[in-house]
Amino acid sequence: MTLPTSTFFAPGEVQRVLGPNPRLLVLPFGPHGPSIFWQQENQFGFTQAGGYLGFPPRAMQQYKAVGEMFGSAGPPNIADLQTFLAATSTHIIVAGPGTSPAFLAALPWPRRRVDDVTIFSVPNHA
Image: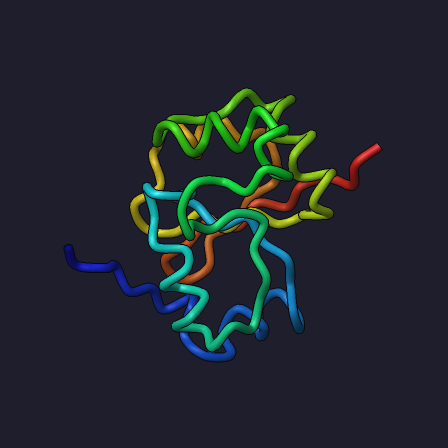
């Protein structure tokens, strides 16, 4: 398996664009994506609400969005995703190469393209 490199995840690049130590949901999620590889490529300059080190930890299993994203490459229910993002204090989604076009189309938040990723700004949670 060849892991996709991304210019956005080069050392210091995430921080240049999003500030120091941002908390991100990186897509593709879980076993469908290389988010842990990209985090290492960036020299661990950001934290993730997600990633993949095996089956989701018990504390994360309560969020429907985790199961929805873990089980398929398709988009989760937006309300479920908002609940998960609020619980993890995550306000930025970075969709890297390989993210499903259906997933991208389903996200209702403001977006911008930087390098080879799409960055979504998730509004503050109520």
